[in-house]
Image (cartoon, rainbow, N blue to C red; front, side):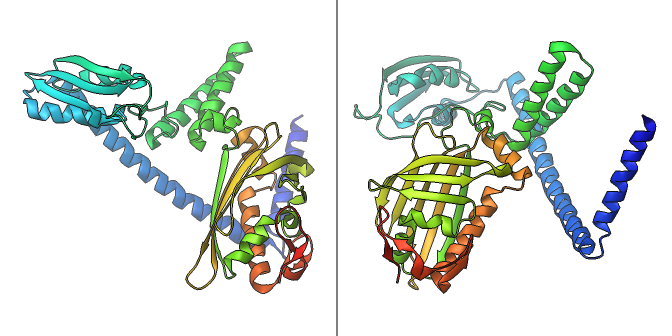
Length: 394
């Protein structure tokens, strides 16, 4: 057994030496690895600095907050009223509709408020330092806009929680990774269902902390097409009418998008996509245009029940020099969500890089009249128009 392990180890070492010492590509590989290592070290240094500052500031805040809790200090009614109004702004979507009056540390709240926020407002005001008692005379309403005062406003979810928010702070991510590693190491020493449960819990916690993505986005469950989002800005030196007409004819995409096998567009504007995925897999779905403003906006979304939910919107803007600025936002939900996205990248399929390459070919096609994807395609051979009308671009 030991001889076999030593043999495998020697074989692996020999293959590695051949890979890095190859006279044709070894020098480039070593230089590329060195650049990656320098970049990783730089990123690690920046992350360590951010973590150090975040830990220092949060520790100082916890210390001062604890100090104030154990030390009573007189607060005048004017200062206390301002503190209460500041607290209302964090838990109430219409703080201007709430009248605050303070007398001898006792706070009275009057006005109107949403029903969903009433249960948060009174406890939040009671936790304000210096408040002795809270009296509520608030009139709850189910929906804003139907009364004179609570109109507009943004819905408040209350103060952010350390581990309950969608985005964790650097300190929370650090402790999450450490907790995940601790659970995983403990799981190796356990047996049976307990060890398995601890291992799964540690893995989930570690991945959640490292990626800083919600579990719904990691798994792709219950988020629709919004698990992975991509954003790209590009300027094309071509009239906006021509660029919009090109994007409006989706049947042209397979000719310069190497990962798109086929797109068929019917007379109603619904499109049928067939796309090449990782490991040689193919995915198919139907999409429909949800918004179309000629030369300004084009938005689409996959129909319900498709294997890969996706959505996109493109804004077209005319530049002062007669070109077109494209603001492209894409979102999709691959199988297994962000975990499936990461697995696809390990297999060499990077949607962000594919998007960049496709847009560069698009730019070349519209500016120079020729681009190479699956084939060498010219601008004159492409059709434009909606619904698959075969009108050649000029």
